[in-house]
Image 1 (cartoon, helix red, strand yellow):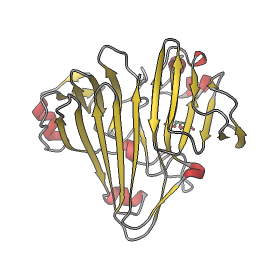
Image 2 (cartoon, protein in one colour; image 1 turned 90 degrees about the horizontal axis):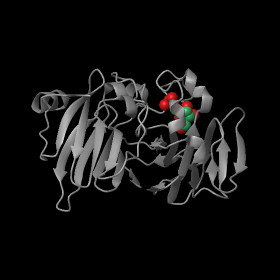
Image 3 (cartoon, rainbow, N blue to C red; image 1 turned 45 degrees about the vertical axis):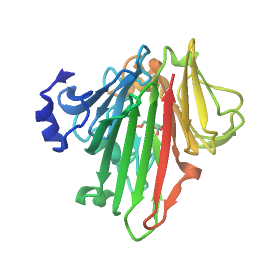
Image 4 (tube, helix red, strand yellow; image 1 turned 60 degrees about the horizontal axis):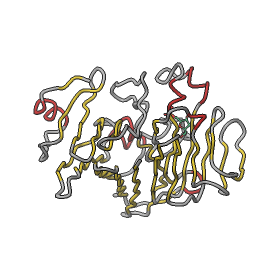
Length: 298
Ligand code: TA6
């Protein structure tokens, strides 16, 4: 990552002036603007395209997020790792539109940035409908994403349906968590829940105990409790969200065929994604809004 002249890159992004002295812009890879936030409590890096967090490090700790060593930083291509925002639909689209929606591959606007009295930094980013988004999703909308960087990472996504009809809506914080070895971790907080195993022929099953990984895993847990934990040796990551679903994914050896993962890198992440998907899909009434929150800590 190359540090750029702050004001130049900022002007290129959206012309909004940052009000915090703790944030600056770098470039990720060959040229996606990356907003870096640093304060006494923690640090974070956010790719402007997709409002995509690719790093969150509490001070004195290790990164909670995994970023692929083979990540590709190119316009319109979602970055592999961190927290892709899958919206306004999750997964495949019946008409063959881009998987996981367009939010993760579209430039967002930096609305504001400020340091709070308690030492946290607040970043607000937004995305509104354009001709291009309406060609994929024919609705007027505003997504407003608030990121609070402190000893914990607090996220809040407000989705406003600004059209005069109701709109189907699914979304997920598709978080890639950094782990030592995916076969050695356990995910708690999903025991006894119904889930949909999406590998091969979809099957509806009930989870017994913690989730462990023995190979390719792709499951949608429904009506989940607020908190899951990823237990990785001496480190425990806590995920707290009001969202109703949790998607647990690791491609296993199939990752060798995914260009921006490749090799053995898949062994060092697990995705535990909170959102409202499948049976938990939402409908936003005309003029209605929905707020999804997620807090990550170690
Ligand atoms: O959330 C799990 C999942 O939907 C998997 O089925 C897998 O395809 C993954 O997301 C990654 O999707 P992507 O489009 O980022 O390659």
